[in-house]
Image 1 (cartoon, rainbow, N blue to C red):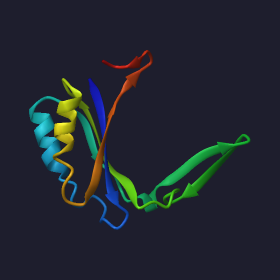
Image 2 (cartoon, rainbow, N blue to C red; image 1 turned 180 degrees about the vertical axis):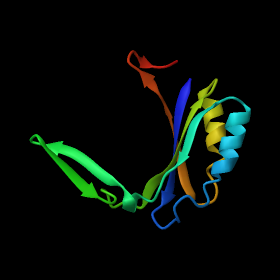
Image 3 (cartoon, one colour; image 1 turned 90 degrees about the vertical axis):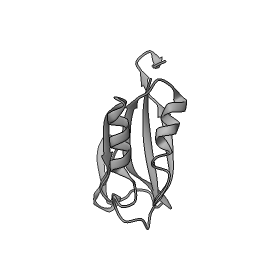
Image 4 (cartoon, rainbow, N blue to C red; image 1 turned 30 degrees about the horizontal axis):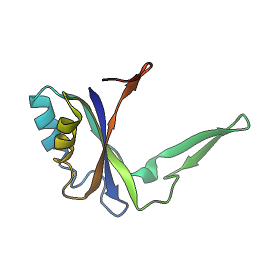
Length: 112
């Protein structure tokens, strides 16, 4: 089963700091469960794009004012949801506010 782990940090956390990025990369790579993993740049240098009435709107910087933002994403192929949660626990310390574990779907629905 494939899972996406979204690591959330507080808005005040320094970009990429305290995520224990290398730990989850090493652990999941060693077990063969890692598909990809990325620490994300600060949301202030991002953009939010949407289309309204056929017009493309681009807003610079973070679109939503929030207490937390996604600071990293990890795509894993695990035998179970429980294993994905176990790996998410490697990221739950430091500056991480929490880790969301989401199962991926294919065109037919959940990949089970």
